[in-house]
Image (cartoon, rainbow, N blue to C red; front, side, top):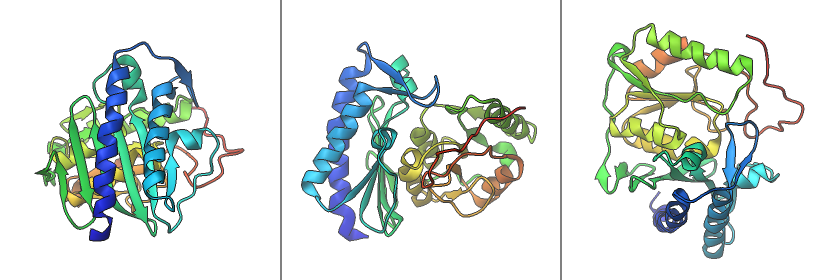
Length: 286
């Protein structure tokens, strides 16, 4: 709604400011820490950028709430309420950032009554600012975005990620999904290394679909709105309605492509973002 436009413009401003910190650190030596696995990394820059974003927003909008990747990792409860809530990934693509692979993004979504009102994805190294406001279309650097409209899965380029999960069940599921798609056959599989950028590529028409299992709400909440506002479709991997907390997503150029992907991909067990992960084990045997 128009009443949140000022918030979106402020989000764009602080994303650009935060990107300067990321770019300054991009080629510098980094202190890297592990989170859930050797592929799930965090750096001082992730933490610094998140604190910078939340501090700026809190000063301007003191009643708003936050869901931040690094805050949750530090033990804060993840809870999406009806209150205005900023959902923040300070560096989406931390492994890329550590290795200086040039796809690193700041992702900011804003939800009210549990509905995303706007989404911002800033691909810092590329200097591409993707944005969308509910009902107002999607843009990159102020140029309108449109999906490819492709309806034939056999003519589709699909983007996915292996993700941070390294237990046998997750790896077997993810690689089997890729084989099943290639056997349809689709025209190709790509992986950029950041869920936010992967997903907005569908909005640009550069890719025809994206799917992933195991990412988090801060990875894809902004991109999901950008895709739908560009004319695309966003679903759960089982073909049901998209739920940003489920950690499963298909984004596609059309419903036929989305539904065809849902027929062949399977999800491994993963705890919802809004559930207590204590005692849940995702590991298993192939």
